[in-house]
Image (cartoon, rainbow, N blue to C red; front, side, top):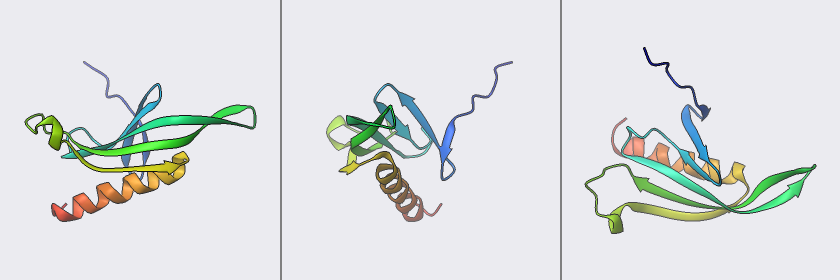
Length: 98
């Protein structure tokens, strides 16, 4: 039997990172937010995400590529980016009656 994979979560939604790209949300939902780390800065001996590009994208494979991105933004720091992403997904949930 396959093990259930656990992900880090933020406000009850999974976060999946692949190098400098972070996906926030469930791929079974209509939309997820893709965050791309554009720049990093040193802080306390570590590299921290600085400038982050956000895109809310459709998970529907039948949507044409030019219609997949619903919203775009750019934020300073991961905490601001995650907060905006959570707001976007919460609004979409409310609009769809979840």
